[in-house]
Structure formats: structure tokens, C-alpha cells
Amino acid sequence: MNPLSAIYGGVVEARNALYDRRWSRSRPLQGPVISVGNLSAGGSGKTPFVILLGELLKARGIRFDVLSRGYGRGTRGMLVVDPGGLPRDFGDEPLLIARRLQAPVVVGEDRYEAGRFAESRFGPQIHLLDDGFQHRALARDFDIVLVTPDDARDRLLPSGRLREPLRSLQRADAVVLASGASPESFPLAGKTVWRVRRGIVTQNVPPRPVVFCGIARPQNFLLQLRAAGIDPIAEAFFRDHHGYTEKDVRDLLQLQQRSEAGGFVTTEKDAVNLGGYLAALAPLAVVPVKMELADAANAVDTMLRVIEDRRRRS
Image (tube, rainbow, N blue to C red; front, top):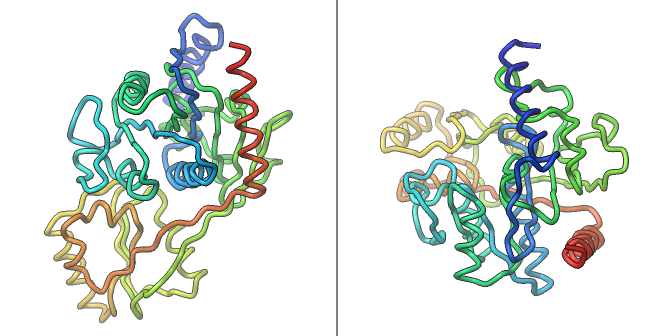
């Protein structure tokens, strides 16, 4: 193991031990907390899963809000996301969640304080904690962790992308197998296992497009496009959460001209980060991610039953 990864792993183990042995306390909110997280740094589908879970709760008439750190925002403190706002104020993913779910999304560095702020504004309803598996300072009533095939063969930061070792999955209430992950690759004895299928919805994609995006795993998006019969003529990839500039738009238009492309195709998150530059890249197809949970009704029933039992015993 890389010495830096060994040091990082030791710090993670020590921190988790503080919570496991109750030397550090997780603080509860009045409303139930459902955490959605992962083991790796980006790219497992947490945001699409939060949106999917929110849609399933909305279909049952269950009120909820979403708590997020608001990664990449230039503001501080607790804020309710304005769906018509800008990613620099709220972060791109909270903004995307707010637009898709039309439900309250609260960003804050301290998720416990963000939850208290949400309860002061909206009451003690269900809280969906975005990217919450490592945020142990906030108590949760149900812990969901997404894993991908890459996680099974990856290494700890900084030599790999894992934020925690695979054995940390023992803390999870439900492990979600994403991107074709195999249950045999993970320590899942006694765990509730869910499966999701993640795809894209392609409509009105220009012929011979330039594909561009700033996401954690751009090659996966490219593979999904090709699987849908779309073969981009040129590519431009940016770092995750990239905030687009006027120069970026000029460069993309020059790439389109050089490659004689018919237009552009990108992700929903990139459309959020483009903001007012969106129209300059017409024709542009914005491709949403569609996530489906196998046996969704039974999964939600299980989750709500566990939450009710734990609340009753507490």
C-alpha cells in the first residue's frame, strides 16, 4: 500500500472508531435522516439516486427536504436553494436537485445545523442527506451506500479514489449496486442489497455532435452515448463541477467549427454550470440521467419500516 494511503486509512479508521465506540456523538434531528453516500470520491450516482428517492417519496405524498454541503459554492452559511439561482451561490448538484424535485434543498457546511435550519423553516419532515456516509456528526435513521465495480478494485486516497475501505459497508443499512456492480465483489453478508440501473435519455441530439462535460467519470457518459447510438465526432472534458467561462464557450465553438460538428451534447449538471452561456452553444442537447431502482416499492417499504422501528425504540 502507498505510505500516504496507509496514513490516510489510519486516520479514517481512528475517526470511525471514535463514533463506533461512542466517544464522539452523532447529533440527531427531530425528523428522520436518510443518508445517501458512497465509498469513493465522486462518480457513483449519488445525485441521481437522491433525485430518484425524492421522486419515490413524492409519489407517496411524503414530505421531505434535502441537506447538502453545497460543494463548489462561493457562499457560506445555511441557505435554501433557489431553483432559479446560480451554481456559484448553491453548488451545481444542489441546484440540479432543487430543479428536478421542486422540494426544499438546504446547503450548509455543518449538515446538523443545516437540518435544524430546515426544520425551523419546513418542520421536522424526512431529511435526505446528500453525500452523507462519511458525515458521521449527523445521526441518521437509514444509511444507503452506492458502490460501483471500480470500488471493488480501487485503493484508498490518495493513490486511489476510495474514501473508506470496503469493510466500512458494514455500517450501511442498504448497499446499492450501481453500474453493474457484483455482490460477490463486496463484503455484504447480512446486508440489504438493492440494484439500480442507470441510463440516459437522449432526445433531439444534433448529428455528429461535440460531446463535452465536467463530471467525475466522463468516459462513462461517452460510453452511454455510444450505447444509445450516438457517436460524437469530437470530445472536450473538464474537471468535475467545472464552472464554464466565456473562453470555454469560444473554445467549444472553435472545436465545433474545426470538426464540422452539427452541434453539442452534454449532461444536466453541465447545463447548470453553463448558466447564461447555454444558448450560445445551440443546437445543444442536454441529456438527463435516468436511474431505476429494482423492486422500488418493496425497497421504500423496507426503508420506512426500519425508520419507524428505530424511531419507536429511541
